[in-house]
Length: 128
Image: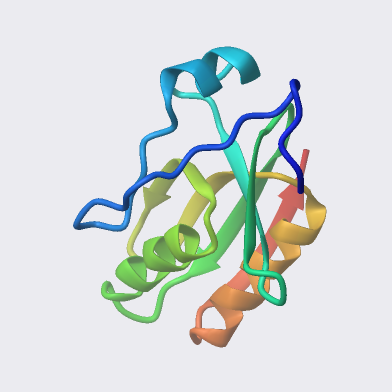
């Protein structure tokens, strides 16, 4: 990817937690504001990371049964690992209801599969 008048090029340093700060001039150029979502697209073969604003997304609602209370930790960890935004979580003795912000229905299915792979019983999920 070449640098043109419409593009920027920066060298950024990772902090001790692996984070970078998007420079203010870039945030201004892309209209990024605190609290907005960005998508990271990684091309492993070319070792390229693309960061782009998320214009829209979906809310997926999952109902998951619990065998033990520690399943809640596994549930929340799975959401975080998949890069999703947990918007709502309510747990009773035997099940949890959660709402998650995702980019698309493919990510919703991928999260459901991740939960199942961790031994969690996804009773149902829906997307809106």
